[in-house]
Length: 78
Image (cartoon, rainbow, N blue to C red; front, side, top):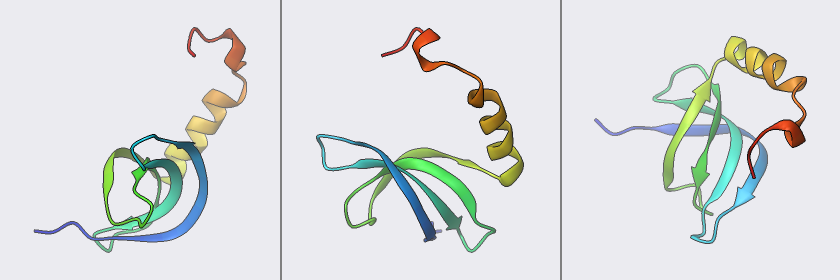
Protein backbone atom coordinates (compact mmCIF):
# COMPACT_ATOMS: atom_id res chain seq x y z
CA UNK A 1 0.00 0.00 0.00
CA UNK A 2 1.41 3.38 -1.01
CA UNK A 3 1.51 6.16 1.53
CA UNK A 4 -0.37 9.24 0.42
CA UNK A 5 -0.06 12.74 1.83
CA UNK A 6 -1.40 16.21 1.31
CA UNK A 7 0.33 19.25 2.75
CA UNK A 8 -2.56 21.36 4.01
CA UNK A 9 -0.48 24.32 5.18
CA UNK A 10 3.23 25.10 5.27
CA UNK A 11 4.06 26.70 8.61
CA UNK A 12 7.79 27.27 8.26
CA UNK A 13 11.30 26.04 7.56
CA UNK A 14 13.37 25.08 10.59
CA UNK A 15 16.64 24.47 8.75
CA UNK A 16 18.24 23.94 5.34
CA UNK A 17 20.36 20.83 4.80
CA UNK A 18 23.34 20.57 2.46
CA UNK A 19 21.71 17.57 0.76
CA UNK A 20 18.88 19.73 -0.64
CA UNK A 21 16.36 18.79 2.03
CA UNK A 22 14.75 21.26 4.43
CA UNK A 23 13.44 20.50 7.90
CA UNK A 24 9.92 21.89 7.86
CA UNK A 25 6.93 22.18 10.11
CA UNK A 26 3.67 21.73 8.22
CA UNK A 27 0.10 20.58 8.65
CA UNK A 28 -0.18 17.31 6.74
CA UNK A 29 -2.91 14.74 6.10
CA UNK A 30 -1.45 11.25 5.77
CA UNK A 31 -3.48 8.56 3.98
CA UNK A 32 -6.60 10.77 3.91
CA UNK A 33 -6.68 10.95 7.71
CA UNK A 34 -7.20 14.02 9.88
CA UNK A 35 -4.39 16.58 9.44
CA UNK A 36 -1.62 16.76 12.05
CA UNK A 37 1.36 18.95 12.81
CA UNK A 38 4.29 17.37 10.99
CA UNK A 39 8.03 17.96 11.44
CA UNK A 40 10.37 16.29 8.94
CA UNK A 41 12.89 16.81 6.14
CA UNK A 42 11.42 17.39 2.64
CA UNK A 43 13.06 17.84 -0.72
CA UNK A 44 12.40 21.09 -2.59
CA UNK A 45 9.48 19.70 -4.63
CA UNK A 46 7.87 17.96 -1.62
CA UNK A 47 8.03 14.66 -3.52
CA UNK A 48 10.44 12.93 -1.13
CA UNK A 49 10.63 13.03 2.62
CA UNK A 50 12.59 11.50 5.45
CA UNK A 51 11.41 10.15 8.78
CA UNK A 52 9.69 12.67 10.97
CA UNK A 53 7.21 13.17 13.76
CA UNK A 54 3.52 13.98 13.71
CA UNK A 55 1.60 15.58 16.55
CA UNK A 56 -2.11 15.95 17.11
CA UNK A 57 -3.44 19.20 18.59
CA UNK A 58 -3.20 17.92 22.17
CA UNK A 59 0.39 16.76 21.72
CA UNK A 60 1.33 20.05 20.05
CA UNK A 61 -0.15 22.03 22.97
CA UNK A 62 1.81 19.84 25.43
CA UNK A 63 5.02 20.45 23.46
CA UNK A 64 4.44 24.21 23.54
CA UNK A 65 3.80 24.09 27.28
CA UNK A 66 6.92 22.03 27.97
CA UNK A 67 9.28 24.02 25.74
CA UNK A 68 7.78 27.47 26.26
CA UNK A 69 9.55 28.07 29.56
CA UNK A 70 12.91 26.57 28.60
CA UNK A 71 15.84 28.89 27.98
CA UNK A 72 17.73 27.30 25.07
CA UNK A 73 21.02 28.68 26.40
CA UNK A 74 20.57 26.51 29.52
CA UNK A 75 20.43 23.32 27.45
CA UNK A 76 23.60 21.39 26.77
CA UNK A 77 23.08 21.38 22.99
CA UNK A 78 24.55 23.17 20.01
